[in-house]
Length: 457
Ligand code: ARG
Image (cartoon, rainbow, N blue to C red; front, side, top):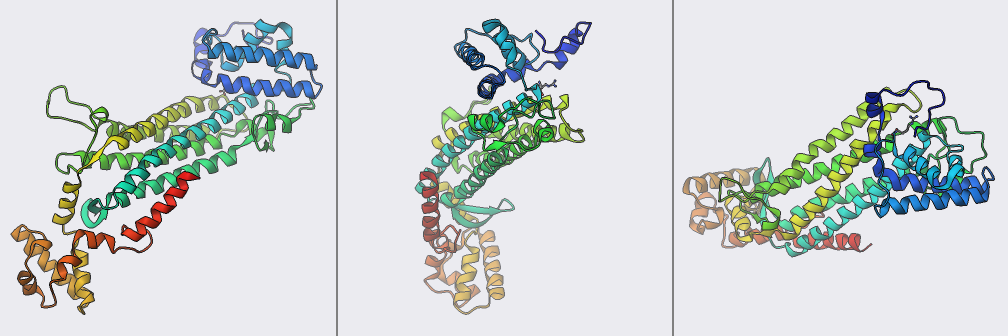
């Protein structure tokens, strides 16, 4: 069945049909489409546009369609143009001519705009929940690793010692922002386009506030042309999605590095690693690599939709049908990536000895050694020079500053005393950094309290 045969005298070309049709992918929207139609039919009945009986019959018919699709007894037929056509045709088959009244005062333009909004709103909630689950795992790891020392890096060079807790808390912060961005996007998009019609509203006395309320929207949209042509919320959603993937990709990269033989900071669980078909010794971080790789396709979805929307005149244009596959794919990619990433984090183990050793051998306490001299009256610039010479000496002699004897140290400055060793131990270097946001014990305790609150709210 077609919804628009009347003015045509020829059948659509088969290729044109295939090119034009969207049902192969927009069938994903069947529930949203049916729920939107139910609200519309209820409103038509209440407003006296159709009779209460007709309204009730349509609603009941739509409910059986949803039920039958859910339980697999009704298969969505790919020969229809789109999901809207399929549902309407099936309704007419079930309840007869009354079904033909469903589309009164409605266009597929406001219908599809509504479906996509409902889908996106729902998926924002799913994604946000998935990120929240990941944050719970992260918080456990943060709490367990406040004394797991590791080198912090700048330029991928060992810089100053931090802890796994502090490092992971950086990602916790990113995910807080990600969820907050999703929630902003959800708030802004939560207006109902249903009733905008094709572009210019309708002459029927539709109660748009009723349908908006029925479908959980804050209010109806204010401009009917904007309602059917606005895809900003999808672009915003894809923007949030791209940023989330960027965060996961950075995290993935670190996991790949830490899992390498050279670093050996972590060990991924067997269930989250894969082997090589030729090299028996290999245990590869494929999940992290794939998440990093899939970031590309989510960025692609964002660029694709921005480009589709560029220069589109008002109001609806068929170009906009291209929004769906990109958004569906991004949603699937995001949810899979976040869920798998959570499992990978939850099961990985830390090689604390190697991390501490790495922090120790990388002169990550050089700043603290200089600060020690400053505290004993040496000017910082001079202290910097002294420690620089010590580092050079250590490199030549293949040792850490901590491994030097007091006599050796005194060769470089008379100021050194026995207390230097405690002052530059990893524990001291980290635990005394207690400015807000620093890795020190007190600062991290404060941060953890905040994260615990965040998780329990
Ligand atoms: N499949 C279409 C889309 O996704 C539905 C709206 C069709 N509207 C129209 N005027 N042909 O955008």
